[in-house]
Length: 75
Image 1 (cartoon, rainbow, N blue to C red):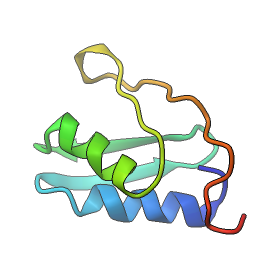
Image 2: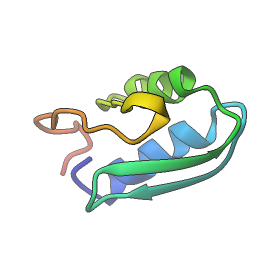
Image 3: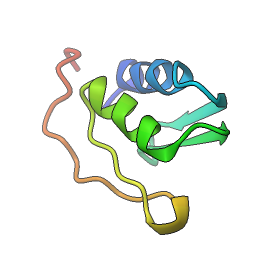
């Protein structure tokens, strides 16, 4: 994510995953926190499907994905 538009796209993608109760996206930290019963693999697929890279650390802890070069949103 490189701008607010990116963060909004990731937020929308994660919010659409069944079981996602609340979603907080932190642009500066390049991470998102999802509360609820959504499956981690579904969350990763949603972010990737929106055109962004995603990673999750072991045991569902946040991971770091390599930065993508340009997001395509015009930023």
